[in-house]
Length: 251
Image (cartoon, rainbow, N blue to C red):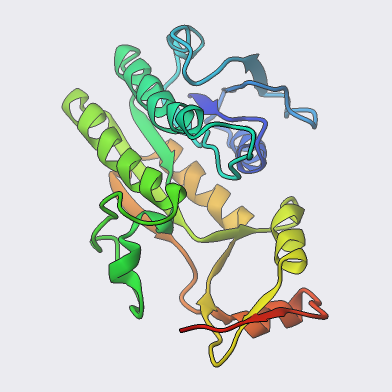
């Protein structure tokens, strides 16, 4: 089995490349990105410098059985215009999906997010299942809007081609390789007067295990990747050693 991975130089993809390379059934992993990985790749993996928007993306994808698509502008840099961000996230994804159809891959695994759900309807809700409504593109966060739009786009493109589409919706992904999230939570610690909101965190190895399973077997549809329990904001801040949290009113 040969796996094609987008965004291999990112955090999650580095975790996935390692896990895929440990799976006996996986013979090779080809990863594309616009910059080379900061750390050496596993023996089974190779890097190809390429933008997900490139019309050439179909060429290195040829001969692969599964496409794992995680490339996405998560932390939007101020210097990047919104049009470029949307071009990467939306048009780049469409380009990769159409290349998958052209190459007749068996499976397409997409790294979505629980942010794809309708955030207005989600307020005050608990235990949202996979059939909860997706966002309508009218939320204040581009991230939420794009994740919802991409899920609909991929279904529209891949379903007629008979390609099994798996969409994983994790919350916060944490683990020893993800120091950036903890640093951000420490550096931007806030408190909300009279409120102690809940949040959920899933370990990177559990996420990698889910992706590896989807690479090996047909898992059509969407899957939440979250624990059964949750942590309060104050608990998270205590765990990571926050000394001071800026307080804000919450109306």
